[in-house]
Length: 473
Image (tube, rainbow, N blue to C red; front, side, top):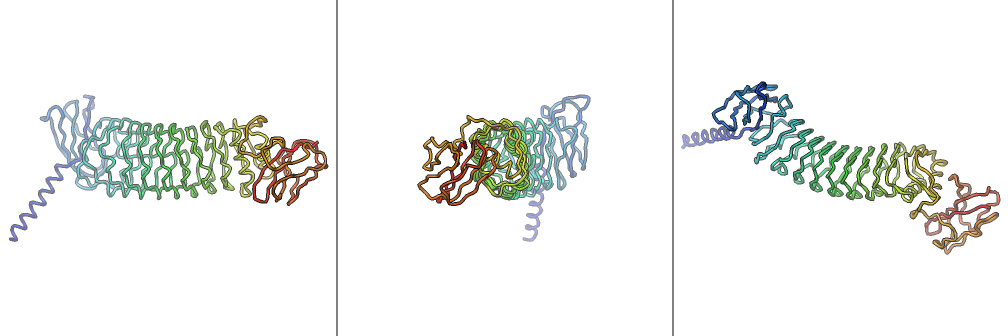
């Protein structure tokens, strides 16, 4: 009985050894230059190898390799299958022959290094036709794994990879221009870095809405110039993300809702929506910790939403935030109003707004920010005829309000007639300076003021506000 047990154990071990030998990593090399009839393997880890010419099985060879560069001289040009059986922990590195590798036909049973950063970086011609699934369960770093694989279009079963231990996916598909395979099943729970993950991934447009990104802190450049990507990722938990700079820069197709995102920990949104087609309502975002919004909507001719509800950081950089954007007179004015009315708006900001225009209402709040907060505006201009549907700056004859000021024009005293009790009144001159503050009054004296255009901001008992143009004779 004991002999049978020993025999069974021996057969089991032998079977496992044979199985491992039958499951090497297999790569296909194309050698086209007779003057350089070599296959160079650059690795970490020792291994045994065999090679066979694909169109002539009699041309074969074998040997062993060590960490670093191993050269295999083949007898003639052509295509060769190279089988690699590591003796321990293993990974590939870049090397002089990366353009000769055209196909990975089998992953094999490999004890992969935990750090596979850049393993196939620059392998421009590689296709992954293997049908088996690599054991990446212990891998923690896939940084730049397929970076520069410009022709990579086949990666069989990539959706079934076990990436649950990976913390770094930065630049994973950087410049993988042809890649567009489903990866929505990936377990990204432990990932903290997705910087440049799909940068220049021109073709990628797969559903990744179910990814758990709760631990990610860096999404900068993530979809930068990912021309085709336009998937709904509004359900993502981005509450730990700190850097979103250039996240969708030049992402030409992307225009999905992002209003559910918790951006309370983000500090950098510079160039986030620069150039793309994005035009969604993000007014509910908490941007109070963002210190860099420079060029956030630069040259995004599609974006036209008010951001007046945002509370800005005291240190926020607003350089060219709206330059050449699609923000029209109404939404630009509404944004200025919201920021001017917010007592927590910071001091001394410089706002870049080349090409933006503001009307009578926008002028009030722009001047208020200049005179009360010390702001500077660059590139915008006054347009007296522009429409401001989101600002309640009305001529008294418009009939659009139940509140009336009379007489108008006025020389001495202006009376306020309203269905509700007046809570407070502000009189603002054309420069945005507040020249009068009054509480619970139905009349204001203007006899001492210079002739010109003024604006009366009235707050009623129910909290509603309206602003009205007044001509002082």
